[in-house]
Length: 432
Image (cartoon, rainbow, N blue to C red; front, side, top):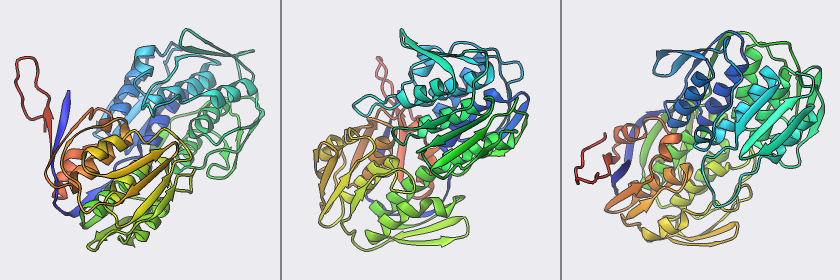
């Protein structure tokens, strides 16, 4: 077990390179199961969720060759249809994508119900299962496993309307439909950049998917997918997290290797708060020298403000002048981090899906705990901006989605270190 020690109070300067998108990678890797051949995937982030999904593929018989730190060749030609066990699935929400991938490849899937970040409530997969059933699968949930099976060995295209905009359901149904017989029309879908990326990956391997990024996706099933090469898009949320850190700490940082258009919803809010942002090709120059202004935020499906950036912006608003209100319309229980911010001196009150933040002059270092992936990132932002030393525990959540986060912040002047928590003998040694 590891904790982060953060000595806050210093502005950030320099440049940071953004890794491949976590939310795209954790869907594209399961999608590789459907490819009968070698697919070379570039710009894969080195994060624990990716490591876990690769181990699931290996257990099913995939051959994986590492080309370099962020490029792999995955050959699923000889993959067998096996069970994705509880122990693996509970550690990663994205394991649910194995349902659509195995169902599309073999016409049958047996996958344990997924885990991942707990926002204080259930994260249902009912829309995923509705889609599978509409494609002709028989679906049962028994003893913590989802068992889905195509009636005649292959799914049949259908028209599907999602009752709620769902990123996971959109991707899972798209995977299953890619090799279904006939045309599948999915309406009321999510439009996030990583959904477009998954569709582009599948198309590069021979799928026929149109409309990703709009309200309606049309999938004309093909017999099988073939090998190819694909590079994952940059991580919108990682980039946004570094933008939030500059806003909270002050300074000037160039954030490189991004798609600026994907950042518009985040940039707009930071600019309202007094942060200067300049677009330069595939980079953003982010600068903050003056005081932060209050603002209101409401999370929405893309292209609205992303729920995955809500905790990081909350950390910034804790230091803004005046009263700000955050309305969480995606995950109403995503304010568990509020009590941790209060330990640092933040004035924040939560009422169901609302957080009311009264900005303070400064935060103080404290012992705090990451309660999920994005809340953990927000803890780093707050700790870097605070006066004094903070200790962040449960950092395994952060490492699920941020590649080399310690070194990246260090290069910007952030004083942060990973330290092993003492074992029974009391020994402590630096982890990084």
